[in-house]
Image (cartoon, rainbow, N blue to C red):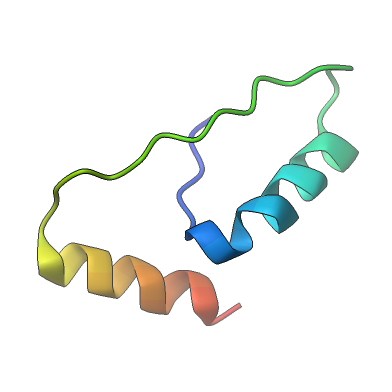
Length: 51
């Protein structure tokens, strides 16, 4: 599973995955975005903050 979020929501996403995942120790890693389409990154930020 790949989940995309923003840094300010990372801890909340980690907690939720740990709460609902069937594994005792799910693989949770953070990969930095070093480059990307500005329009896509703007859209992603807006989309995750709508929730």
